[in-house]
Image 1 (cartoon, rainbow, N blue to C red):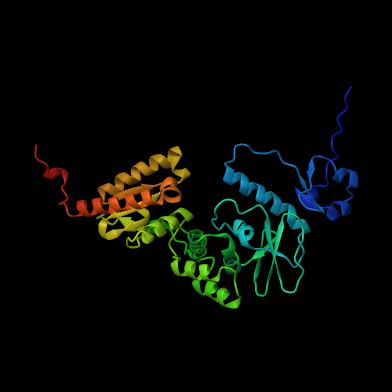
Image 2 (cartoon, rainbow, N blue to C red):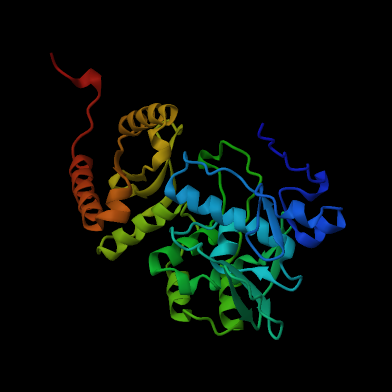
Length: 335
């Protein structure tokens, strides 16, 4: 008979991630800490091993893995250290491209000692403000923004800037918001730029100059920059559209009001059944209000940018032509 030894249950107060010293203080023996149901992502740290989730996309899997390592590192993180760069941005929800989370980025204030562990990239700062969120210490929004420059291209640096500067609002004023202030002001970002010598300083200045307060997502930022860099006028962002009766019709991601043209980026969520049906009704309402709409997706923004720009140019021409045609009601049609 094969006897399977079930690991002894851990004290409930430890949670899913804990330090070896915390476990020893709670009465957990060394042999229990070596059992295969526990992972050791960092020296002196233990986590309850979780099965791999094959339902996740590669991007979701990368972020989930980074979050597991973040939670595992917190119990052994030095008191003077804080998350910075891509790690702080991930925690704070700043939109990022994939491939930035092989290591956790951790900062300290000069002259404190940098953390030295496999999987940790330390960085020393002369000036930095920190915040505490859900038991984790991370750089404040402005410092997080400035510390991203070595890892991002211009479009993604602008997208990160847009995210922090965005002033929340309710499309059509239909929903009461719980947050109405931006995560950071333009003055906050200008101040942190002046307070330190940053790697990628010129990139930060360009990104701040190109940042806007109305962009709602990374794809919308990329779409705007592709349009402008293609030589077209900059579209308005987050524009509420109303019909002739003053009733709210839709909120456009980007728009040329004088052409009555709305430009939308459709991500994966638009393939869901309810959203798909909602989008059909929305397009109908826009057309009935005299507007045209252009829908772009990932291949037109993150893939073939020239094709995305071509579609915007064609939509502008088509909208200009339709704008100059007389509008006809059903009652004016002859049999």
